[in-house]
Image 1 (cartoon, rainbow, N blue to C red):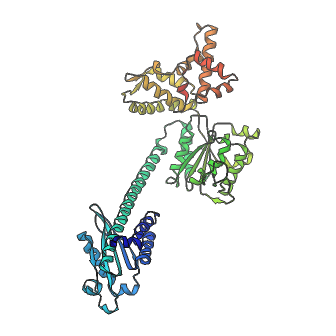
Image 2: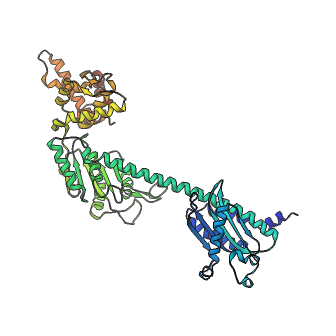
Length: 512
């Protein structure tokens, strides 16, 4: 029977399978290599080993992992000779094989050959294609020529596996570094985007907002941003975060009204595996994920009272517990909250706890509605006109005087968001270089209904007012017909019929 089958019978080829599994089972490369050397020692009698990792371009040594080499052996110069051989192998890109060390003491610099057993030395380059990633050097007992040839082949395969792992690690490190740089660039873009100097508005009301942002940004105080829907509360929250020392840490937003009450606690604080039916794995919550940074809770007035109690504990102690766990986790997170409701009224109605309200209202910032910022309407219009002209590859640079009058005379129930949607839609409809009244939504033109001509009949006046009321309500609720119906104390079917009759485009009120 060929000697190849004898090797199989002694399980020596099993070593290759074990080494392969070992090298691909963990991401901790150095520990894995040490375990590999230990395996080769137990299975094949390897006595010493060095894995040298180099930069595949410059060949500068990045790391050395040794096995079986004592401090005393390093002192007598053996290790230095191994380094010299490593350099030669890196230069030649070919292996160096010394079957009998005692016959080649001049190469390894060993004087006392009588103390040596019959040992062999092999140094193999770690290569994938034309790329070299280091060398694998080993010292082992010589048995016979057949065994030596087998070990040479085995080490050749092992070196290829290691080289492939090093190449993969290099690719992963390169990708990781690329992602790190991209992340830094994106954070810088966000920081620039939400810089307070990029906020638009010169009215006194907005100057007061800017002043408040500057005052509170450097602190860790909880901020409550109040204002009607569409006034830019999230923009202010971003500005506070990116002007603070937490700017390089996460900014995480949660819309409290958009998450079902049954999932809200898990979303905020996370859960342990098995905490409930669908908890197949442990998950950290948004508060824990925001550690070191800021969490922004939008529409916080929609929080159920039970959740207010749990959030109150976080605000007081800066500690949380995941659902299904008794462990307490300390978190360093700043809270910024926002609401468009009358909080004091909700405190009176007991839907918002008084202690929770006082914890939230440490530093309130009031965002004025657009109707109180008449000076800013045209500034915002110019900004949105430039933005959406670029996005739609158009050359619209002006608005007519009649459009200017309409925009300044309109009450803007949907605030800045409604104005942005209005300009975006108008830019799409406009084929020239100037916006005219016909490009504006019907709700804007109806803004003049307060000064109706006496020639209008009662029926016409009622219809115009009715349409304006519906339009204003839809703008207030971002085009949600069901919410609008509730506010107007009517049914969804009746309101939908009115919307259809007045030819109101509900889509223009929805969030972009």
